[in-house]
Length: 126
Image: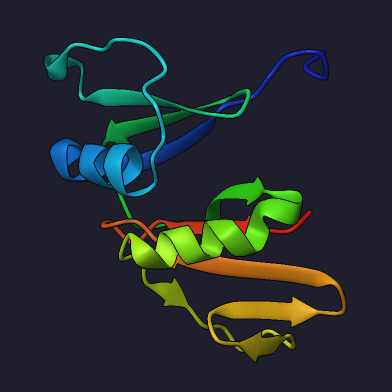
């Protein structure tokens, strides 16, 4: 039924202008179409995926990962670029070895960070 259709990541925020600065400038995501400011939504492109960022009173209430990027061999460069852009990484006690801001389990590497509303975002080397 849905397996042949792309899905979109959807993230709730309290302040759309602050979210535009974070997702568009800090993370470097390009817009995925024009949306009027009164729409309370911004669309971004991440590879072939659309990320919908919208204004909601429930922003930041999800205590689980909202978006995951599997970036393969670009992982180290992307982590360095995010650090340089001022992104602060989260450190979790999840049974993985922590090396700086990177969690490792064998060859698997992962890092988590939050947007300004506390939505949890994840990058890994898969």
